[in-house]
Structures are given as structure tokens and as C-alpha cells.
Image 1 (tube, one colour):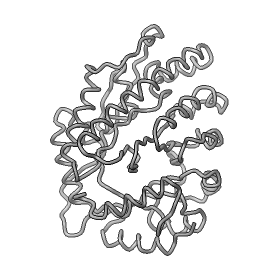
Image 2 (cartoon, helix red, strand yellow):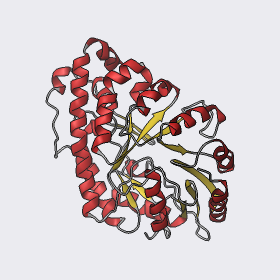
Image 3 (cartoon, one colour):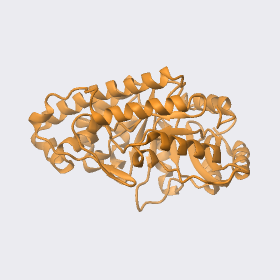
Image 4 (cartoon, one colour):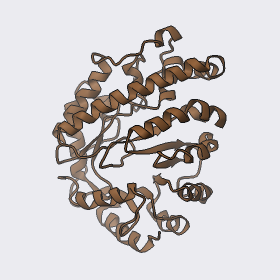
Length: 356
């Protein structure tokens, strides 16, 4: 890979990680400025969305970012097709409202409008997603991974189509309608995912990527249900678990995006899904970071159950302490440092810190 000289080595570590194995060190993705190259781009994850009428410009900006960035360890260049979280809602009736660094999708509809949801190849937002996936995977051949767009979770998509507050009422007043809608969204989710996968495969891309920035040699996706922060474990079991388990069965690899204190009560239900490979913990706004000892009991519980653990945004100077408390087996850490030399030094030190 042009912008990842040690890609073959990184792939082997990631393949082992998906199996819960450790090679010579814990899996670390570390990003830094590349030595000797001036920084000229202001790339962030929203450049493509802001330039959706000129995706070629966004792709060129991303390539500048690749030239200027050192992707250390298991970090790799990935152009994620980002038009906002749960963009699949726009393929089946929601209208997006774009802001400079986010997108909203709520377009409340009556139940009768949601009875005949279909895959519509002519939908403008689906066509945009296809076009950008095609352009990126063509331009990025042997240069970068093209990450699958954020399709979203079934109940989050349902919230975009019914309205979040209304969907909360629906769980009590029309539970069978909610389940039927969620099942139909899940069925369509498979179709959209597979169509995007076919594009990247056709253009020679090995494996898959997604918004979480992890590569798999097979099909993978980070599943989520942000809506679940507002519901009880009993409702999570009734309205989320079945579709989530089916999605995990559909793909070869899966990680659950466990986001914020509102979802803490669902942990055991997640851990009891055999097909779910792992969990990414995001503490949420106003909470201590992923490196905080506050979360160590949760990490140990996840690892006790044999699940992979994804911790992103761990400060580089906290990694050694973290590895004294939890196992490197099945652990993936993402971090940033200032320079390429610092990144390489961190990776060498990580070999000494790694224990199983």
C-alpha cells in the first residue's frame, strides 16, 4: 500500500487480533505527522460531506492527508464515506439536514408510510453513496482503504423515520409495529451493505473498513444502537438484541459501539451474544477518558467473556499503565503523537509492555 509501507505486517497483526491472538505486541494504531513533509491539508472526517457536490476535490484532499501522515502500527489510510451517522435513513425516506460537521435525519412519518419500505436504486442519497464509494475505491487502489458509509443501526434508523420521542412512545403503544419496522430495516441494511461491498471488491480492495478505522480481511461493521441509551435492559432485549444478533451472523466480524453511561446497563446482554466479536467503549461527554481506572472493571468483564476490546483516543503516555491493568489479548488501542519518531518509539516500547 503506497501510504502504508508495512501494510502486510499490519494486516497479519489485525488478522490475529480478530482471532483474539497477540503476535509480538498489543495492537496499536498510532497517527503522527510524517517526517520531512510540510502540513498543507485541513482534512477531517467531514470534508467529503461538505464537498458532496465535488467528491473528486475531497478525494484529492484526502490523498494530501495520506502523504502528510505517518500511519504507525495497525493504523492505515482509510477514506471513510461519511455523510453522517445512520445515513441509510435517507435511502428510505428521511431527509438530511447538513451542518458543517454533522448531519440530522429526523423526518417523522406515519406508520402507513413505512409499510412498504423498498430498496430504491434511484434514491439520490443512495446514488451519492455509491458514486463516492466507486470514486474512492478506484482512486485508492493500492493506496488506501475505502470505509463503508455509516449505514446506522435499525432502531436508530427507525428513530429518524418516526422521530426519537415518538419512537419511545411506540415501544409501549405499538411494539409490534416497531419490531416489524426494525426487521424490515435490517433486511434492507443487508442489501445496502452488500452492494457497497461489491463495489470495493470489484475495484480490487482486499477486506473491509468502516468508520471505526479498523480493517478486517473479511466483511465487518461496527454495529450500534445509540437510541438504547434511553431504554431499559428489558426493552433492549425485546427490541434490539434479535436484530443485532442477526446482523452479527450476517457478517464475518463485528464490534458493538457501546456509547456512554446510558448504555452501561446493557453490557451483559451484549456479552451474551455469541456472534458478537467485541465491544468498543466510548465514555461519552463529561466522562473520564478511555484510559481512566473508572472503566477498568468493565474492560476486565469484557475480556473475561472472551470479547475483543476497542479503546480509541487513549493518550500515548497512558498506554503503559493501561496494559498493567488489562490484557493485551484482544485489545486494540488508538492514539496520536506529534512526530513519526515518537510513534516508532511508542511501538517499540509497547512490545515490552505487552502481556497476555
